[in-house]
Length: 263
Image 1 (tube, rainbow, N blue to C red):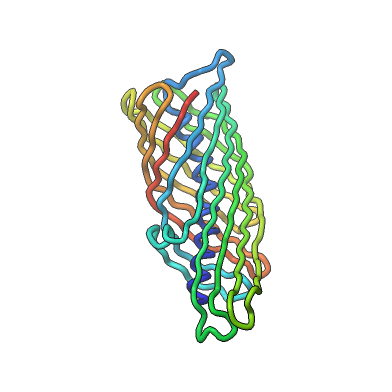
Image 2: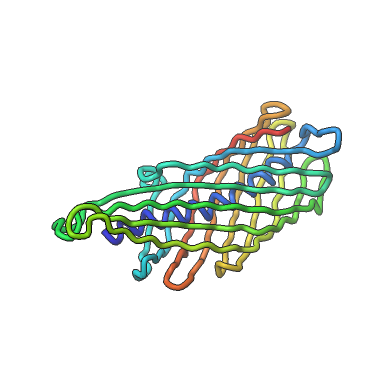
């Protein structure tokens, strides 16, 4: 039961960390595509819901247990996902940008206990939230593309609960979680191959609450019209966070797909 429950917990945390970074990066990247719609004030705005089919590997420790190595595909993770909401927003003016991201996920799982004496079943629920706020400045910019220097602060909050049903321990539960903030910074850029097709990528690294977190990605995008674009690519992120027996040292990677609305 320990390895099964720990694997579920690990997914929740990794999904949080990775999706948060991706959301902000996606906002910065796609909003830099050429020929955006500009308001009378010169501002441009972007909103982008997205989907990331990522697997996870690494070491996770919670509830005072020793760290356990996990290695799960996206298909394994999908079976335990109850709800997920991921979306970003960005505002740009000339070479300057402000971006934000909000993420919430909820996963759950259950497993029968051995012999069913102390409890018949153990249930796990994990909820994760992330918020990111950052700024950027284009150090290189022309009609074909741009290169931005970006930086910001990212907050993570993870809450995991294990509850028992049946047996002597029926109704007993225990929660574990943590909240931390990291400063992150790096580069992101885009380059138009045609009026409709563009390439984009980014690289971020930071730390603070975590010893280190990093994020790299490469995408290709297609602009359907002045307001709608789509991006697809591949992304990987890693984080190493430890605090008083609570540990997340994981890497998550997989394909990404996003729908981008410019206004």
